[in-house]
Length: 405
Ligand code: C5P
Image (cartoon, rainbow, N blue to C red; front, side):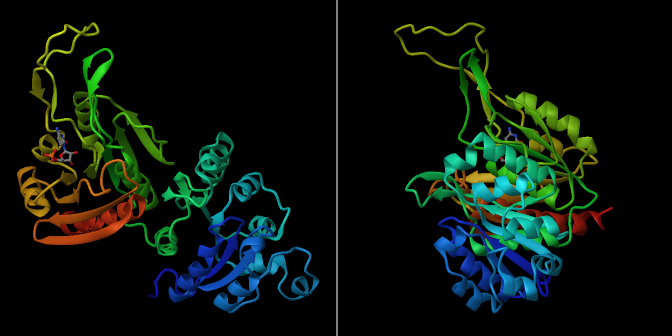
């Protein structure tokens, strides 16, 4: 389907060596369907996984992989290729190519073209999950991000090496959605977005607590997408093991009461509050200062209710546009609509928990409800969903508060 922001775009697709290189063939086809002109550069190792002929047939253009190709350099040399591109996308981007790009190397055609081009650069990493989490790769990715390079994915799941983890190439359509969003209008420009994310931990004693299975991924993905959409973003995070998305101001908290304080402090300077945190409803009435000892008998733990942060913000006037989440195991729409009304929300994102969706997963599916409307967002990577959710949030903001400043 033609995409208004990709139609006519001249996309240079760099394909580096890795088993995910075969997916780049479909990506070429999809980019062309979106209306883009595509030229492909293969690295030498990519050419061991896939053939230039495949990409030539799909792009309808000659494919290059060497700096030392005399005929090609006579026709469209690497400098012309660098000037021709108005987008450079490296997909898949191997750990090696990320390292070389981070260090500004120009030791093959792809890295030379990147250095010689002023076109925005996007990379879609794909590699074994240990390579992705290695400190060297992390540092290279941070260097690239700090330089304004867009990093799409990677997704989590089964890997070609037989292991499971983060490091899969995003699917071609998800990559196109990311590229279109990065090139497209910034629907939250000028707005201040507050996001809460993750679980809360309620202490029983100095070593034990009551927590929940929220990973924080959805909220972090929303914070990241809000930055990409042009917002100024503040993130109040419960205890999670996730890196702070670039450009986000983060405040770490532990309990629901700490989260309440951080949120209420930030609310007066926020235009939109997305409450993605799984706030614990109860806490131990009297946490013990000392570690509780085994007594040989059963023990009762008295719980008192925590403040409902979102409902409290809903009672403020003026208040930011309010977006809540509802994780439900049954009667999704009924319970979510009830929460929308009871908490005075402008929009609620409901998801069914269980069935490998929702908590602790990289993917989710959402049902968006607002007064007088609904929209279903099909199962996708949480980062892709976050963008779709924020598109709807931006539309709600315009409908209820007028134009963005
Ligand atoms: O009532 P329920 O917990 O299902 O509502 C979920 C929504 O309310 C989420 O957006 C969550 O962040 C918020 N919430 C809150 N404070 C609580 C409980 C939930 O802000 N104590």
